[in-house]
Amino acid sequence: MSPLWLKIACALFVCVLVPVNWYQYGPVNFLWFSDIAVFMLVPALWCDNRLLASMASLAVLLPEIAWNLDFFVRLTTGKSGIGLSGYMFDRRIPLWIRAASLFHVWLPPLLVWMLSRLGYDRRALLWQSVVAAIVVPLSYALGDAKANVNWVYGFGDQPQSRLPPRVFAFVMTLAFPVVLYLPTHLLLLKLFPGAH
Image (cartoon, rainbow, N blue to C red; front, side, top):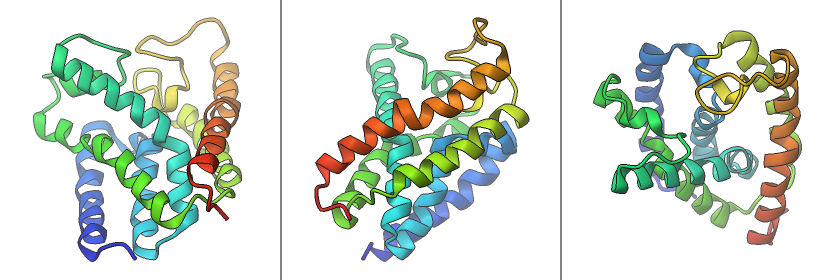
């Protein structure tokens, strides 16, 4: 069973994160898979729910590791990496708002800790793919190229121009399960062999 202090801390963090990010970025920002993973984390902790912990892990572990590498390289060297955490160094965004995004640092180890306790649920691949099939088109329909939630307009700050925007969004809908989730699923099955 997860410690009570951890359950309370994560629930309180979400209570802070929602108004802070809503104020700064608007409600569409909550379609980012990292935000969805934090929302999944609360009931996963309170109920020791292996499926929710596995879905969150499947969705964000690899991107969060990339975010952390980008963040800590820039923090220690001052050099911009792949740009995932560039907004954390944007002085136009108030520090207290950027501080709320530090959940990217503690989310991966917490998810790994949960998987080590609960095991990895192989059903996560199917269910997280269903989530992506809903969330990615919503990110395109409700968002814009500036916010570029879940990279539905292209990678980086500039929209891609090789494909029509709707086609690219459709490709991203397929890419999350095939390019990101499937390899992560296979890796987590190996790392947590007690999976059910």
